[in-house]
Image (cartoon, rainbow, N blue to C red; front, top):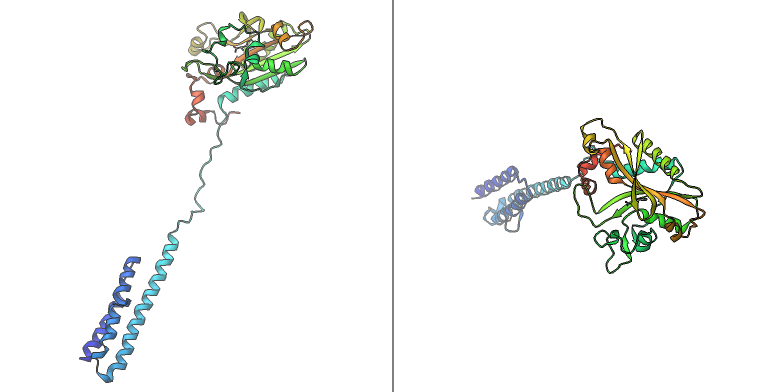
Length: 343
Ligand code: PHE
């Protein structure tokens, strides 16, 4: 009888030695099966009553060693599993190559604007920046634009909600009024900035775009000064050999003109964009109308001046051969990346 029970105990011991729980769940199963309060070891101790009296002590020692072995194994495996779990926490690989942070690129509009500013800086024009939300007076009235001028129409101008006085400036000419009312001549400024017009968005036009305005007010400023300044700009900016001034009309200049640069006819694209003439219209200009000077508190008997204004988008499109103005406003990285490295 006793021998059988001793064999059982030894069999249990080797079973425990051979057990290989791998996971937390398997280890828990192992614990319940052998060490738990209803486990096989508990049962083994129960067998002691069937053991012959003189063997009880020996059996007790054997059962104890089975228990010790089972517990030791459990503790060891538990520690191993916990250590492994700690290692599973994701430790970043510090030797991996870093993520690439692109440096970004200047927007073509900024590139062009900066170039224009630089050209005029060289002949003494300084940058003046002003507000995009303007009042009717600076945008229109001061600029000699009559009450019934079509440009004032709701069709062209974005007025602020519930206001006929506040608007998004429709041109940078509003900066002329700001500068003339704020300062005394001589005034020699270049004013880049965004302007807005209520126009249908297409490949050629947008409801927001950018202009650069120029203004020079001093004593004895003549149309010849205007012409020389613009010729200098055309040469520096475009390497143009000549310019031409065509009579035009703006409410705030008299006389007014539009300036074309000679672009040339070197290839097919040149034929297309100049409509076969070789000439490209770049800006509007003229001598500041005496009414504008008066409106802004400058004596037209003493001072005269010229002004010009040009759109940036069209120039960017020409320079970078961009076929659709909308690319300039969509911020598509695939488009913008092409200007990486340009200064
Ligand atoms: N403000 C005019 C426009 O938006 C351009 C211009 C500016 C013309 C200054 C003459 C003088 O078209």
